[in-house]
Image: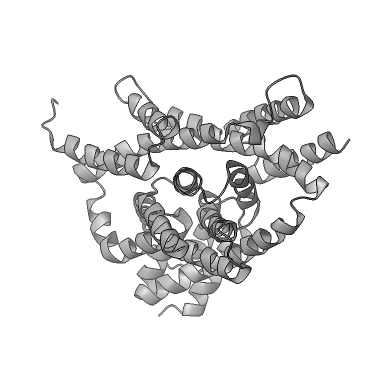
Length: 179
Length: 191
């Protein structure tokens, strides 16, 4: 039986020592789960990754939840998630509280003037990477374009767009295909 | 009242985010900046920079920070804002974690099912558009300054171009791109 404290400690390390979000955590998670503890083999781990991508929400937390659940059911999932997010929450809260008192400082203001255009670029870059790997054509390219325009120009909620797309995708799959 | 709205909003954001951290950014921007106006576009851009350079999943960091800032901006004391941030980060993971318990076995067996695959295929396309909308929503005077022949605009466009090219090639980690642009800002505007 896998110990709760082992589950907690593994995900604590992954959550605390990776900067840059879910996919940056993947190699470290693989090392802990597959190589160090042998909780899952390579194939099972690949299944967890596919499952965590298919479920909505934060990828890293889904990985913690599915793995913890597999090892020790609900309590295992809770321990894994807790370990994964406790330090990130403490860090970002400390920054949120501290940032208000320094943000009018001239040096901090100058740093953030430099950061803001970089953030725009960091959000824009994956659009082009994902568009390339999705192999957009004239028959499906209208979907991302229409979603972007609906949200950006018309102010439609992204949640509504996801909902409509999911229902639309489901309905289309029911239509007879001309194979 | 704001706590109920935070809870509901972040439950929805967690439930409707597909395809990782950047699409969650799009949803948080739509609700927190667009719909409720809990933070300004400028605060949102700062939040994104901060959540890229602190450890942990970007989705959790963004939710925590957004919860805190929304409550503070609504005029509540700091302890209430800390509660708001915890509420937002718990809410954002609640629905997916519930789904893990309920449907993970079913989904593993049906991941090759035609309907599931069709829905995921459409969602993958939609997410591209949502992230594009998030990027377009960040383009404005708060990020680039006023258009024209001035130092702020020139420096901002240069930073954007360099970071965009480097990010596209995936050679440099976003952490270093953020740290580097901060240093460039510090030097360019302090002189």
